[in-house]
Image 1 (cartoon, rainbow, N blue to C red):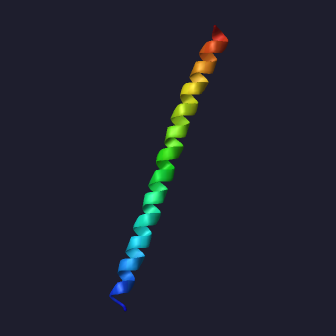
Image 2 (image 1 turned 120 degrees about the horizontal axis):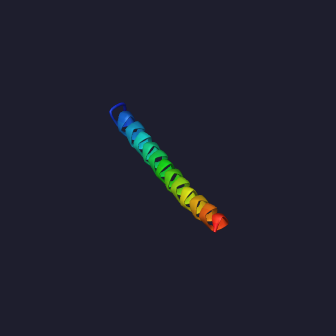
Image 3 (image 1 turned 90 degrees about the horizontal axis):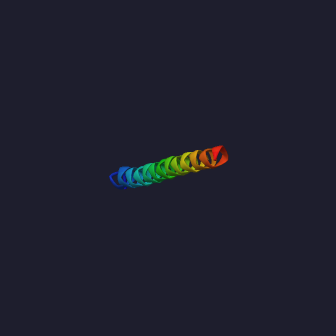
Length: 47
């Protein structure tokens, strides 16, 4: 039983870290898109 415990905890931790990485990647992508859109709108307003 004891030998199985660390394996389950490791797997759960790895899954959590993966989800955190995915969230960070998605948020960074959204920020990049927002920056591009804001730049486009600013250019459009100038024109």
